[in-house]
Image 1 (cartoon, rainbow, N blue to C red):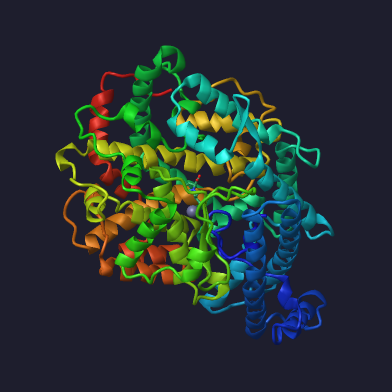
Image 2 (cartoon, rainbow, N blue to C red):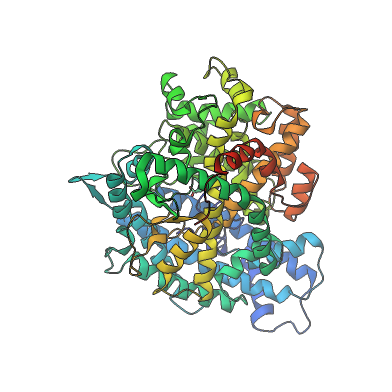
Length: 631
Ligand code: X8Z
Ligand code: ZN
């Protein structure tokens, strides 16, 4: 169901550029049928004796573009209907559209191969290569395979979104459980929630299978599809989207991780020591990885909710954004309006009226929905929306900016060919709103009336700690999610070793461990939205590097001279204009060009992260001086 060829580039579910399909096969698209027939003749029936021509490539591209436009809108509307109202029937519809889309996507990718050796202008070559990579999960061509794959994906997604959990004899909503992990401080209760959440991926579903079994079937089927398209496996195909040979891209992510790892290691060591003070030696032994349920988040992926437990004693206590929002009578809509106002201050047009009419901003009470936040562009133009189950807290204030970033990006590149309606790479799409949120500084909060007085800058180590618990803590998780999937798709991990392999990576990279022993029967990766949803995850790791590069570049543009963490570009039309230039490109140019145009350098670089957190690093090293770090 989260197949990108199906939908307008969504924030969460499918930020890849491609979406297409079938409806344009009919006569509603002027000329499309003829163009298609000519191309099919040429490709499949060898009617044309000589090799392919640029004219033929051009006609093929036009045909694909027409499909993307028409079927993209159709499939987006079906997918939206399902994600905001999960029923037997909407599942059925989304499965059908997904299967149709996959079948067409596979056909297009195969036909694109015909132009492999043809010399083409750069833009056409890029379009042909994008078409080959368009599917998130390819199915084999044999009859019935696309339908089977779509059924597996719909079932996994819906199981994740609707899985029921009972706590103290009462059914508790999944969205509520997620936030409880941030507020509950009783280790036994945290463990209970954590364990129950992870029963869902191994519980029997309506088809008599489990998510774990469905996942294994999905891996086998989509790998078969990837091999038919000429890739080693689906993981290789995912890595190929980064304008680099897949192996080089994997090395590149390791290089970036190497830049941030020293900071992470210090943070992990300090947080473990502070949690030990709170929970004692038994729950948090000082020579072991940290218990995953004590870090304030269902997946231990960002740790901002334990700030109060690790806050530096001599720092300014700062402010609690959740409390400020509540004290100032913010509701979900006002949070979104505040995000919109930030973009407006940079010179972006206001969101269209339809955004407010059609978005799902809070959780509907009367039906099942996918609560995991996402941003949608329904029609390749101005019908942009977000889908959230927003709560009035600091996490969701961040997420609102994140999702709006997707929407503003989508709108900025709407004039591009539908083939190029995507991020320069997946990481860019995830970084836009986050970069804006880095400008939520004390001064900014004062400007918008949320904070009366700004804290003194000499004690900013607290502010930096809060930010590091979100951004630095996230990095190893951002990296290992796809390391796990790369291993799964390559066959290095099998269903018998899925869970052990998962925990090996969680321990190696994050230095965390499960609160209770996990047998290899479990499927703990399935407790994270992006695994059943098949949303690749390296994009978030990359985004966490890029957003700091973007932030640094924009602060320089705005003439800022203080420390990076105090810089807000709120109100800078100059930054907005340059930012918009980058966004308008979509994925039409290789990402290093887009990066260079905005930051002056074509390289991704963790240096901006290191610079941003330098004062915190100094503090952490001091704190850890007499501790034994590592796990
Ligand atoms: O999935 C998301 C967004 C939608 S693209 C809400 N994020 C990742 C996650 O929740 O795991 C944003 C941060 C990482
Ligand atoms: Zn996102």
